[in-house]
Image (cartoon, rainbow, N blue to C red; front, side):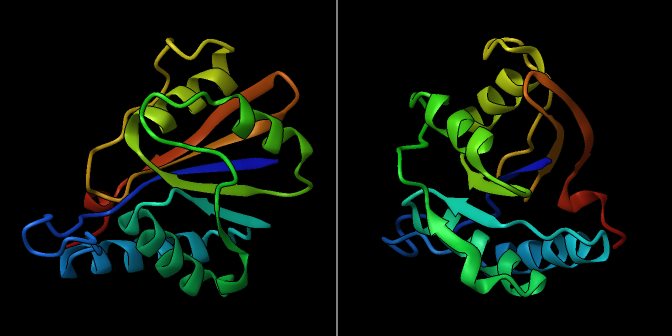
Length: 157
């Protein structure tokens, strides 16, 4: 099984847009990320996101590139900075197939650490904020490894 942890792309400021949709730059970032994942054959059974508009927009644009528009959903539990990762770990264990989470940096960092090390405080990956970074963690049970990390500024100009 693969777990794709996606840090959202660039969003408009609250002054520009109170709902904070992704910016034109963010749209391009999400489209490049989705195209990259499509070339890799990524096919998650679920694409989860938080209740924040910029994570929804990120998830939906990636899903569109993957032909998986019907697989996006708001996580059934909170996934913000200090929220527990245990519900996400339980969902991973119960899911048959690959899963993607479009979310926020601290939650994603702790999720990756919990999978790979069993300890949320043991940092195993890094995300570049507002850049559309993705980390792929592969495994099952208590045996997980980081298989790749990619971010938008790795894309050719």
